[in-house]
Image 1 (cartoon, rainbow, N blue to C red):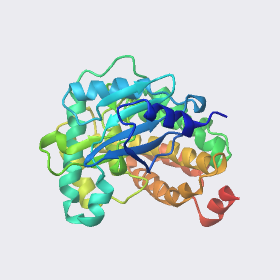
Image 2 (image 1 turned 180 degrees about the horizontal axis):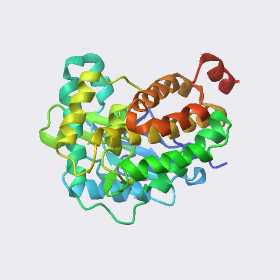
Image 3 (image 1 turned 135 degrees about the vertical axis):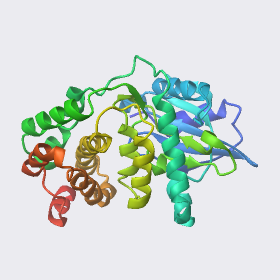
Image 4 (image 1 turned 45 degrees about the vertical axis):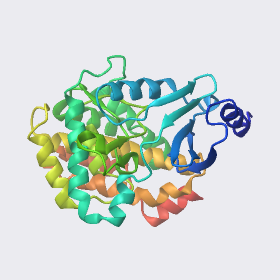
Length: 323
């Protein structure tokens, strides 16, 4: 086992930030960790992405440079050692959407419209074509984890219905999707203007997806409840401007179900395989999003497949996962 602390300390000791104060900051569901280095009022972020845990830094660097070159507020890459899995990044700020809204809930409409503007802008740029594409087949395959780690049932019919729904309502993976586009990955920079107010994090897994994929991520947030009025306003705002074809609300519901079925399986894996029980608390909300989106009459067959395959995360089921 490599001593990551020693590797990081050695990297910092031989960098321009060698005498800065180092403190950990909240991470995400991956094996990556983040440190904030501080000197007076100056700060930078260190991302530690261990290669031995199948983490890669090059995709993040490429996407950060791509987004910055197009005027988006992604972190600037200040130093990068891909062999050691370490990046030094500019610090976009300490207050994410979720933290800001805890203090100022009346700003929810403003923040979510600002985030929706980011997504509409991303629809209109030429995304890197080497990125993976979430075709209907790929989207269906991504859902299989719910069978292996949560429901422990065969998922052939469920995956077939997910694929059919995507083929019908969200068939075109033609838009850059950052994938984890939600309140805790969006920094609110109130002193900035325009798109620069929204700092973007955690986009290394970006791929090409149907329009609205990231909107589903934003509005069907596993970690916080978005008020129905704000969500409806964002959907209407996006639907009037998107390049998506067909009934957009059904397309969005379809993408939301696909995404949240996968998340339910991923959270179950984090609990059972990686001993991260905190993800149990999010699973009932994720299930609620699935049920909500399956109310769309056009998704009746998908709804039946989900109900036949995926149990509600009741207290008893959650206790079983944690056992």
